[in-house]
Structures are given as structure tokens and as C-alpha cells.
Amino acid sequence: MPNFGLGVFAPEPQSDGSLIIRILVTGGAGYIGSHTVVELLAAGHEVSIVDSLVNAHPAVLPRLARLGGRDPDFRQVDIRDRGALGSVLEDGFDAVIHFAGRKAVGESVSDPLGYWDTNVAGTLVLLEEMRRTGVRTLVFSSSATVYGNTAVAPFDETLPTAPINPYGETKLAVERILEALAVAEPEWRISSLRYFNPVGAHPSGTIGEDPNGIPDNLMPYITQVAVGRRERLSVFGDDYETPDGTGVRDYIHVVDLALGHVAALDYLARNTGYRVHNLGTGRGYSVLEVITAFEQASGRKIAYEVAGRREGDAAAAWADTRRAGEELAWRAQRDIDAMCRDAWNWQRQNPNGYGNEPTA
Ligand code: UD1
Image (tube, rainbow, N blue to C red; front, side):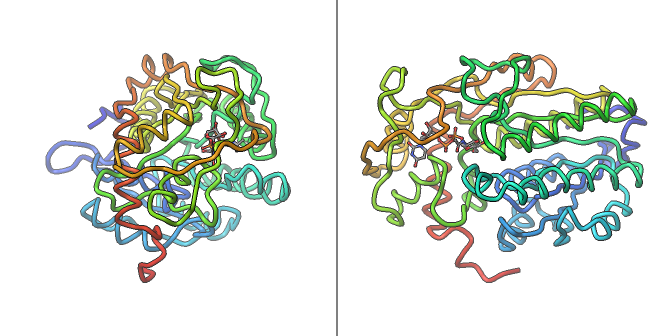
């Protein structure tokens, strides 16, 4: 249990002496949000979720209750709906973890206004309503995509940012808003977490990643090939300057990522102002290495063919994790085998994701 500084979140003591904080999780029904909710409940916190359900399935909610041992409070709210979001915040929270947003790179190119509206205008509504209701502690879901694709790995937090698509631009715009807010109003405590490549699932296989339509990302594509939903994977390029020619990324187990949010809350209990941290393992794996690790973990052969490079892809990206290690006292514990095993365990138990379950 993290040691929240008394008076910072005004935590409520429980009968066993540990402290509860009340946390609002926006986008808490989504992939990373749902795994974070489980870890917050496990740490004894009170959790409320708001989610528009545009990219999440309501079947996740009873599953969260099963994993967490109690029902998280849920409200179907779009963060752009000021009245609805404000009335939730009036219930009183110590902190907000803000996942709600759109995250598909290709879609952000075809619908930039939609991306700026949800990701940036939506965040402005959240910040204004937080201020109105006296909540000034925030953990924001950012992305390593803000580094762009020209820097040389490992990426540390001081690198210049250079996003190359509207999705990345919106993440960076929010970071800048948050930084300016913490300068203007020094009582805010704000953390931006730059995720590398989240993969895997809760080890129980109860919750996991369930993308709409054809997966854009590597791991869900592999698991859908393994379960027979897709014929073969296209490997986007084998002529990069990497050891085997395929793209190298820093895959991080979603449970480690979730625990990074718990660590960030603990950090904010001790620090005011604004701070950025990378969340990655600090180690890169190529596409072919991920395929091999997945085949070993699942016992399934993954059919693939080499296709051309995907526009906008970098050769190699992995995190410099020192700042998170030193300041958050957090490091990723789960290796590529655990990532593949848990991704497979989820997909095997839920071949159609949440799709077959009646809605809650
Ligand atoms: C992508 C997004 C990034 C976003 C992240 C969210 C792009 C260009 N980048 O990152 O902005 O923050 O997802 O998780 O879309 N690959 C294949 N075949 C596939 C899919 C992927 O070979 O079908 C390769 C890619 O070329 C890359 C690696 O697998 O080398 C990882 O790809 P992906 O999972 O899409 O993540 P990123 O491209 O790193």
C-alpha cells in the first residue's frame, strides 16, 4: 500500500489503518483503464469510472467487479459533456486518472477534428470541472508517440518532442496544457505517463484487449491469427536497420503499466507541479522476436508474410526508464514470455473478445 502523505489527498483511514483515496478513472472501461481499475481496487482505493463506451464494452464492468471483489461505480459519460462530468466530480474525489480518448493513428489522420475535440477539448472540460470541484491531482495517459520517429533509442523524457500524426499532436497538446496549468496554479499535482507499447492482459484472462475491427497493433493481430480469426500477419517491413530487419519496440505488460499509475499517484502525494515519466521496460523486441516468443508461449504457429513498411513507422523505439525507476520507484517486472502468455490466455478464453457476453 503506498504511503499517501496525510493531508494531501485527505485520505480516509480504514479499520485496518490503511488509507483510502477516492479516484475517478476516465476511460476506465477501456484496455489500459480497466487493468488500472483492478490494481486500484486491489490497493484498497475507492474507484469511480466514467466512460462513453465508444471504444469499450459494458461486459467489462461485471468482470471488473469479479476481479476487484466489489463493484466499481460506473457512469456512462462522455468527458465533453460538461454537465454530466461535472455532476460526477461533485461527488468528491482526491485524484483523477485520465485515460478517456481516441487512439487510432490512421483514424486521427482522417478525422483530425474528432481527435482534437475528444482528446484536447474533452481534457479542457475535465480540467475546468476538476478545478471547479476542487480536485487538483491528475495522472494523464500520454504516449511515447510524442517523441516522433526520428530520435535514436533509448528515448529519455528530455528529448525534443516531434509527433507525426494528429493523434500524437493531441497527446502533446494536452501535455503542454498540463505543464502550463501547473505553472499558473502551483497547487496542481500532475503526472503525464508516456506509454511505450502496452500488451498482454490480466493473468486470469478475465479482461484484456478487444480492438474494434481489424487490429492496428501487433499483439492483438497475432492473438487473432492464433485463434483463427485472421489468416496471417503482415510484417510491416524487414529492411530496417535493426538486427533482423523488422521493427523494434518496447512492449510492456499492461499489468506493469497499470501499477505504474498506482506509483504515479504515490509520487503525486509527495510532489506538486508537473512531471513526465516514460513507462516501458527499457528493452526492445523485433516483430520476429515477438512472433517467436508468442509461438513458444501459445504452442501455436503464427502464419505471416513480409509486407512493405507501414507509413510513419520508426525502425526502433524503446524507453530510457531511469526517471520512472528513480522517482516513481517503479519498474516493469513482467517479461516478454509473460506478455505473450497472458495475451494468449485472454484471447483463448475470449476468442471474440467481450462480444459474446450479454451487456451488463
Ligand atoms: C502504434 C502507433 C502509436 C500508438 C501505439 C499504441 C503507428 C505508426 N503508431 O505504435 O502512435 O501510440 O500504436 O499502442 O501506428 N507491425 C507489424 N504488423 C502489424 C502491426 C504492427 O509488422 O500488423 C509492426 C509495426 O511495424 C511495428 C511493431 O509491429 O514495428 C509494433 O506496431 P504497433 O503495435 O502498431 O505499435 P507502434 O507502431 O509502435
